[in-house]
Length: 351
Image: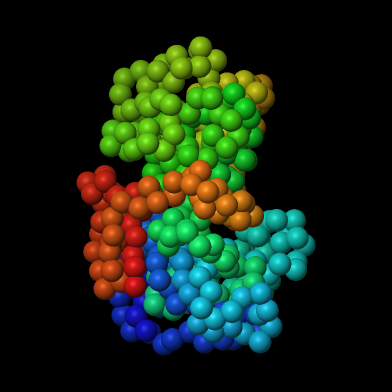
């Protein structure tokens, strides 16, 4: 089969690799019909994730069709259409039973690490992928949900909702600022309304992304490179600051922006993947009663979000802006990595 293979920092290739095979009784082999590229894949290519070894097939998002199952798989069958979750879940360990799939204790890949696809085992940017713990790591697709909608449920929608909205403790009537209107930031914006946010402010350097944020549910936008950006945000909250500030970039400056605009008693929810240390001014924040949360998605809300997508209440298809065939994988990476110029949100790759 063909797959997108990591060759070390800055190196990738669309090349021939052996087909995956069943290794454990709970495995399934899935033909990947649709996949996409994540910002985390770009971090890997920069060398920011040293655990990813040369020769690893990248990718942790996908929708496909089951072509083979292991002998212990009872709830899934060949020809089922499924969402491939970005996390493994053995379904039996203490963490999985608590819904903390990001720290699944199953031995596949590494005990205590849920993110294994394209990280510790071969991933979804390939014609076929082996999925361990298939009954807990795959989600059956209902009729009427397209591949393009479903692939957004592999990662970005549950990430924005769980780590941004839920961890940020968004409540009815709250004012919410989302710093970074990329795909995950837009996922937080589009799901903030599920918990009744009254004001959702999108903050970004890119005017095009701010325009897009309006389409995803932002009530207001602020260009962070403009003079007085902070005053603009404060003016939208009667000078008090936002109830919840969601960081969706992963750089020190945007985390500091969140702590600058949150009101006393508010929450800062960090969603972005940080590659560098961040300075935390606890000497100022402690007396403001600020709650700060971080996390890796658990995907325990995926079934609920899938229902909302199926009912048309979340327009997941809007995230896909550029479309490619599998034979155009390298072009897709170029387009996604130059999002400021190409205006790409999520690139969709179909087999």
